[in-house]
Length: 92
Image 1: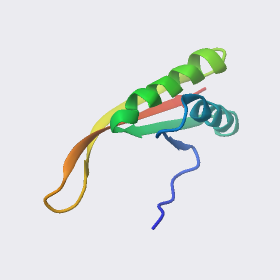
Image 2: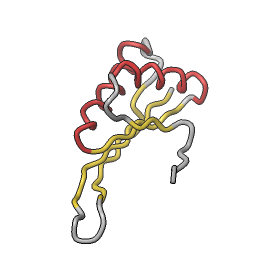
Image 3: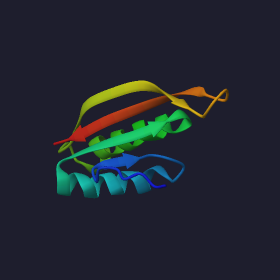
Image 4: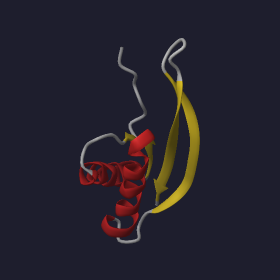
């Protein structure tokens, strides 16, 4: 089952950072605000995406509006574990 997500949310995973940064820049020009989300080992990549968009690609037009960190429980039954998560809101 596939979950639908809002169009202005970018889920960061294992792809190269610049592919997420370009996608973020395109959505920022259309929507004006995006949310970069990541869990676990991808958190540093999400921070890189936000920094590239605000500092290098955005030419100062965009800034980080909010950062939310948390923990999500992943797994089922007795095999649950806690995974760190981050949401970075970038806008004009």
